[in-house]
View 1 (cartoon, rainbow, N blue to C red):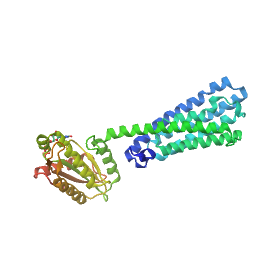
View 2: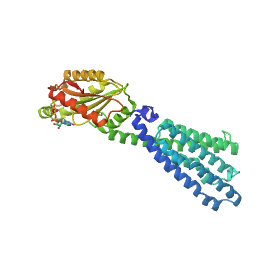
View 3: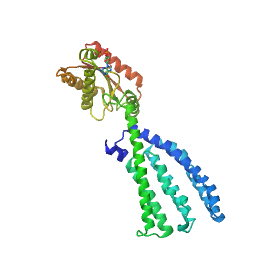
View 4: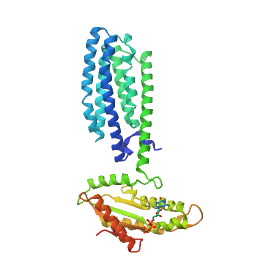
Length: 361
Ligand SMILES: Nc1nc2c(ncn2[C@@H]2O[C@H](COP(=O)(O)OP(=O)(O)OP(=O)(O)O)[C@@H](O)[C@H]2O)c(=O)[nH]1
């Protein structure tokens, strides 16, 4: 478990960031809808429990809060696109709700006689915000904002001091609810990360699968240009059926894992390396001219060729080779066409006797 992933979203991939923000946006929209209905619907309770002068003030405050929350519903659609919109929307939500809390408590004048349902609003808010899969750092910011605003409200309304037992009890309860909120939020983030990994990683080699590769391919195409081309390479193990037949499937799997590790080592962190099919790998080299891409593919080919792979079942070693087809792409290139051309080049490499790299002309 990598704690950095839970602390902030900095180490999350761009794709996962977008997926998480999409999740947060949908839950945020539901949350805002519930709050609008709940805060406005509470007018009925106010009518039942408050005297008429108090009721006349509070129903307007509730309605105003509902009106102020409404623009957050369309804003939640923008949240899906960008983290900044998400932060802005959360900040706006907290501002409106904490202002509502302030005015609603102030309307009671006498702190001692406030009904529990009204004092409990910040705890209720912390519990509701637990539905958002936020990293711990963001969750902490939310909790600190709520705690600070609640204590400032208390201080202003009742001139509490730190020695006051009521204040200590309030802080203690807020901390407990904040911890519960952080716990649930982190659990949700973990669940989302696990599901994301399961659906985007190849279980054998742990490389990204074809699905994620195609998404990344689209992003690389989008950010490239005529002057900043990228290279796409398809690799295919040579006579892999023979390896399986001669040494068994377990050894075949071992070979795939070993080649995947070599691929990641040789192409480095900037390359997009995926298990494209059974014994086929795809590598995307952003901002790399074809000549450089072919040289790197050649380095990989030589590394695979010279590296004996241990058989997990006995003391024997197996030697394997790999063929590759490379193609140059830029933003105007068609993904299906490029893959077809890379496949054609790979086919050529196979027909030229295997264990070689061919570039598409
Ligand atoms: N062990 C193992 N074998 C796999 C896996 N996925 C695909 N294969 C095998 O890979 C083999 C691919 O065989 P072919 O498509 O005939 O290709 P090849 O034998 O490599 O021949 P050339 O590509 O022409 O060099 C098949 O026997 C598949 O069963 C896997 O995950 N593990």
